[in-house]
Length: 470
Image (tube, rainbow, N blue to C red; front, top):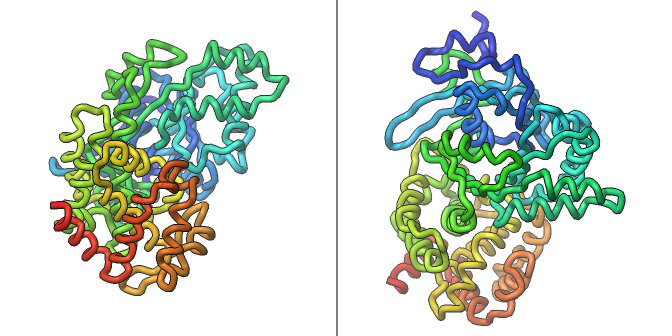
């Protein structure tokens, strides 16, 4: 018997318990161009836009752009842009098929189609989840070419919203685009300033990379195959600056559960330093100890206590988000969600790009206040140990990082010359900024904890820290 696949034609045969799009997905052109068609976007913004489409507002269909992955785009095309999302938490499990993804392209092989999509009459928004390392001159040129064509055609400006884990991401994106402009772009830049909006935003939802387990669960729930199925948690948050090309979008987004505010910064810094900062620490600990998932790290009492103290004692004192204690407790519960098989190696990817945003601000805050930064020092020591590329069980792993070669070159001699290696890594301003590398107390504590990690192992070092800082 032939296996049925999830497509527009098979949508009507899904079990009634599964939420599916009831709106027409073919009669209108997309209003959003999204760059970075990964799992996160499809289980976050795409589901918000699906809500707006379900109200009858046809302007929120997505033209999704895979930056480098034709395989994913081809799979989604074969399924008419449809995929199932398992939403699972303490309240239970439900499946949903969002329908907001209407068209797909690959930036590397279909660049002109992407430029034309940004300049299309119906396009009102461009959103981005290209990861921290994706903010390159090539991205700026792609956006600039689309916006230039739009301006030359006499079309109105649009909202361009970065949704990546960068502080002040809207400001950074606008500066990047302007830096790509030439002397001939004077009129374009004037149009950009007057008609386009680059709001800052913060997005929060844990969305692991797709796995065979999730695809198998989707087949059982749907009664058909879905090669693009995803799993996520019930919690989601999208905080966006009240700065839009069309000011009426603020109320629409709020109706779908988005928080529109002029204070994105307090949410952004809390997420980067509490969620993302803890994630990086746990991911590196898991990678070195051989624990595969974040849930298997937070499930260990001493790691859970470490994370709780890291957030409470070293991060929270420097945050402006007033409900940080509730946020911390919610994060610890979310990290333990058994349905989220969030790979530690996936989260440890690109650590050299992530750590500068996540750890140094808290460490510098503690130094300024004369307070302890031992938890961050231990996390930094584990990061140095991670660059060995071998866990404590003797299993090798590769570093997926733009700086992998230099990190492993620095880290390779840490067993024979540990202090020299730590000093060399801590001297890198691209990782730690320009203040921490010259701080002798910080360097000394990282060297101390690195010695404990090498001699006794990560778990024993954590337990020693907890006893010492009780």
